Length: 208
Image 1 (cartoon, rainbow, N blue to C red):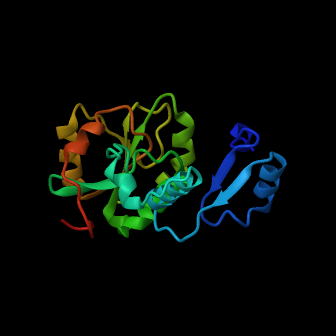
Image 2: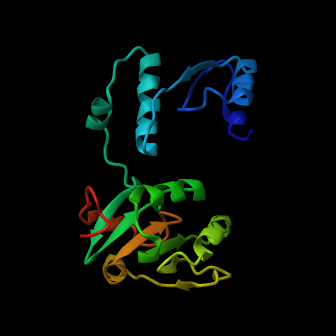
């Protein structure tokens, strides 16, 4: 309902895959006199699903645009999920995922062994609710280690360690020692964006 309250009356609304059976949502949109369009297909990741939404928007405007055409005119999103080589380790760059469900899906897409993976949660003092939402996932004993960086939390999660990074080099050194590191939580708050200068790993990245 919070999302729906931001949709003006009589505007076109494009729904993502598998939303054509959401009867409650469709009923609300029809009462709001919205023109409804659907995207079709099975998408393995959020990026492809978002591109499909964009292509549908172009079609509504009368433009025939392909996926390749969209990427040709877009700068790389600094928050895009990617895996970076950092020293002798690899860092899954998932800091821009704003919720736990998306984060869990991104981790699952890697196929990494949880017992060999360390979690690096970047904390923000003005986002305490996010750390609380992630806490059950972080507290499980499945991980090789759980580390919290950025702003020191008011209450440290049981089993987690707080770690302070002054610069990119210290993060790279940390990842190199841990091997597989999954970064999540928040994209702001420490020199995370400097890591984007690291080489992106393609294909199977569980070993380098």
